[in-house]
Image (cartoon, helix red, strand yellow):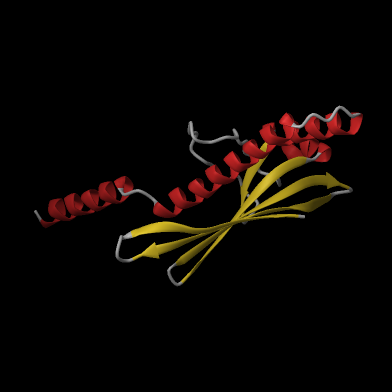
Length: 171
């Protein structure tokens, strides 16, 4: 009888823990969504400019290619999976950059956003670092292109996380 009770208790804990939302993942996904919408808005703003030079057309083509082929990776260079959403401006791709089958694509170079986060007291800092990643001469080359920092603060009164800062740095 005790065994059945313990199994039922463990099963109920497991089911409850699976249904409880992962607030950390929601905050990171929210920061990615905000950043992707900002990038898409900036791209659309650039398209509205009336500049008809060969360099400008090349810049716009390259910008579009970056937006359509952006990969998400976590701080350990592993694929970061974000849930597809209508609010998401950019459709991201996933790749294990250290998998040998991806070296051919990495030789051409890819655009990636690296997600790095840290908790300090009641503030969660999420950095989204823009990279170009290449593989050449048996070495990985990471070129930083700027990024954004999002800071969320937990409000004990409201019992929720609040976005208090969003800064974008361009190199």
